[in-house]
Length: 243
Ligand SMILES: [Zn+2]
Image (cartoon, rainbow, N blue to C red; front, side, top):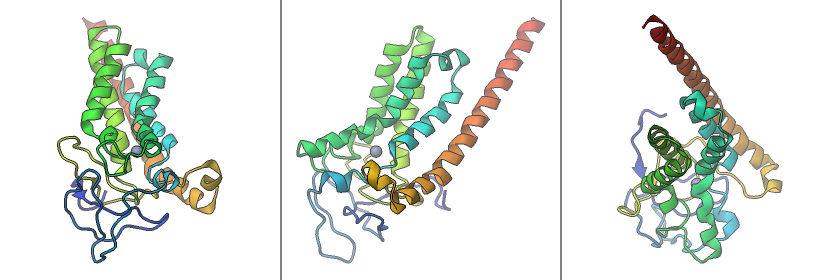
């Protein structure tokens, strides 16, 4: 994180060229479907852009899954033993990008249901977490745990996208506030679409930034959570043995 910490900044933007960084942009709300302009330029942003161009503005799906898997180390060993738990975890981490289907349906990037819009919001994460928790949990305690965990996993998707250096920001507070947000610190390069392009020099650069800034920290967090979990379980066993 930069010195700005967790402060997030509203950044409406144009759809950038692949590999370009967005320069200083006006910090004003971005209305659904509204075209906006780059600061210092009168050229309006494209209201519609191609599927290929727009879908290259996400962290790669596998990176979302890596983060979710690391977070999964925080749950109980009983839950971690269930394959369905991991399926749900990975699914929830990738689900927000289902909104790219909207490009095929004529939904604009900046619309409520456009890319990085409603499906990347915190409200969407709450709904997904509660629904998945209710479906997967066998006991009331499990359902609450799963709902909270899968909320965090789903919300982590938008947080990662807000650290990429392309596209529009993330509408964290949709549908109440359409403002698109980026973190001030955005080290993750936008991902090119298609396997062929991903294996290009640009694709390898994207992968490298994700390994450095996401996979590495995620591995450390996962290992840390695992160690803390073992210590907690050991302490609980010792307490049980004494009583
Ligand atoms: Zn996304």
